[in-house]
Image (cartoon, rainbow, N blue to C red; front, side, top):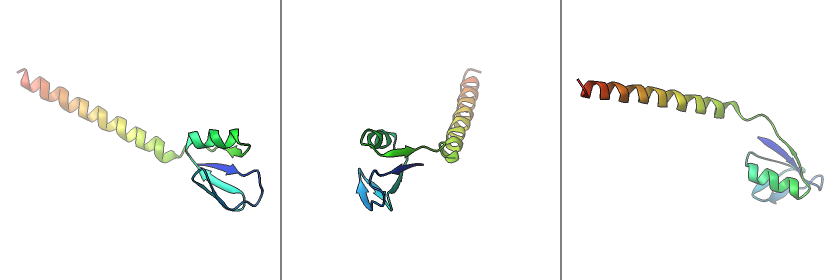
Length: 79
């Protein structure tokens, strides 16, 4: 999650669907982050959340398992 700092220190409100409290908002939407930078906001990006990485790994494991199952079914059908 990236932090976005408003040009007006202490700003409270919503800008581009991001809620700001005391001049700081948070979002992980890359399009919004680029928009904020273009408008003069300061953007402080973090590393991507680890849960995204874990979800990607889980998807890959599921895909590999499904591929193996399909290959086994095809092999059985060809016997």
